Length: 463
Image (cartoon, rainbow, N blue to C red; front, side, top):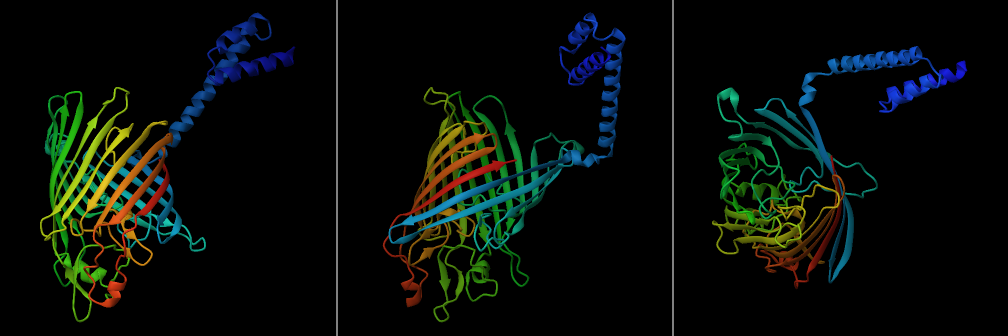
């Protein structure tokens, strides 16, 4: 009987330790059955209380040794795998497997200042791609500093209302409002400063928000000449059209200055700083004697209008849908200076249909985008990297001088795990090689205009 009492007491202790709701009732039953005494039951409970108190004391001691500043640190990142295919009449089918890994941390030191740092895979010489193609006999892949910036949100220290504005300084993601990658690729990490001023924000009424953004992004550093910059300004407005739809619109001007030195420095193959990763499909001017690039044919001052119209339930099925557009007009080019992305989407994303960011398992989204980008509408060095035009004899690098149809479908399989299928149908707008000055260049110009089909199958895990 003594051994039976021992095991009964152990069972009661286990249930008490595990937090079982029925532990008290079971103990009373065992007492009533005479298997244990009331004193033994009370002893077990007291021992478990002491053990729980000791465990809590140890946890408190460990917590006390952890630096307080770690409470301000948040880790984030994602890993993406991609299978990509290129298919075209007269072109040998090409398939490649690519990966992208990004990990960063955000330090919210106070409500008024924070810092963000992120590392990412990819070629350090390519500013518009963090993808890494697998191959080259299992060699290790490079990782680079992708972001490093400080965000200031002056508030109570200066007697200001929180949320009135912010300043971002360093190397950061594209922080302009946009509805596509017409002007800037998603992987671009500009360098310099961005300021935001929130002038108006309301929960009710027609106009919900009105903000102003200013940009000072440095393109390069020249010790012996003027530095190339991008200076820009943007206004963004949000409106609610009753309960039927939400409308967001933006108007911007992005002015690039002193960028001719970039053409001679990075795009000219004979230059010591030549970078073959800097895709370019804009017009350039070459020296008729040497054949070397001397400058861009035109400057770039891009007027940009972007908008999206979102409907929470247009078909009465509980499924959101919407329309979006992104228009660029280069005021400094003489013709072939218009760029346009326009599309529609449906699904649980609810907005930003070009990207289709989903949240909950089972969510899905589908989108279509039509792209028409004339040769000098945008600066192709920094625009969408996945829309260049490939042929068997020649490749037009860069994201301008193309017309394309882009189809996209997304599905959230697990929490923070999204699957994406994407297809690009791409043609050139102008087959003439306007930059050619000799027969060799002419022989490499685009021939015919077969449609290039570029497919992408992605799996993305976010954390």
